[in-house]
Image 1 (tube, rainbow, N blue to C red):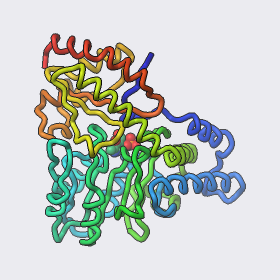
Image 2: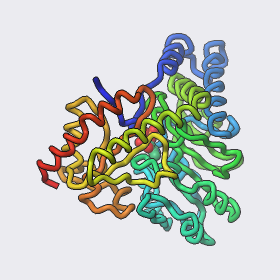
Image 3: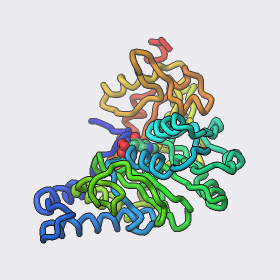
Length: 379
Ligand SMILES: Cc1ncc(COP(=O)(O)O)c(C=O)c1O
């Protein structure tokens, strides 16, 4: 039996998504820019998907542009809206590398970036962040739900403060979309990024919401696709897959959150009862329902991860091997964890297809695997 507990890395596409994409590849293969019947059918499929995605996040369909995933959406948002004399940007210390790298690029162009710190639970303090806004702040970019810890940031409060001051607000909502509700008619965000493969859609497709009237420079220049905001013939199958995944999420959201929350809590209860020296890296009241980031004292995470994989269990680690040495996760370091604690951290993220018997299977094996990893040492 394989137990896949790495749904924050990617999710298995749902049957409904695969069926919808297959129909496009076989039947609706026209170019949406063509004016003939084949083109019109493809255009209609893209338009329908745009409505499905917009409906899930509560924006107008015309405010949404399709991208090749959240990396492109984040880069388009950050690099596309800032023009003129470089000023100040507020972000956080726990952004995804696709935001972090775009911030680095902006710094090299003269922009000054403040990365708001997080507390030991991984939260940015709304007051601290708002206090860091300046006269010359042009943009705030804040991850809504962290991919490693699942910790939710106070996006509503900070977006509201930014709006009052006339500052643009972007949120990387990639991990939240499909797991918890989003309603842009209430959250005053100007830009929002999402990705299909995090909600049981295909890889390589995503979207960026750009509030109407907000001028920006396209990242990809070319034809008039996406209202001139992103050149290139649309990935119709991927877009339809994203639309279908969003329609499923819209229908299932409350039940999905309840179900994944119960599975995650069952896993944590078992771990905390059966294994000593463990710590949940998050505040339990501000975290995605599907995510459990656990520190195992005295454990080399990569060793435990391998042992789990051999037993058929997939999770992910809080440290990565980069150029032959172990690098602690910057997110965990920002939360005040030591490199050794970060190294002993695993992320379990549940989703579609996971059930209670699988969680119990993991709980039956994990204590022994942790014990063996502790005995093996090398932390
Ligand atoms: C929070 C967050 N932002 C952005 C991305 C990048 O998404 P994509 O894989 O679609 O480029 C990811 C995926 O790893 C993510 O978790």
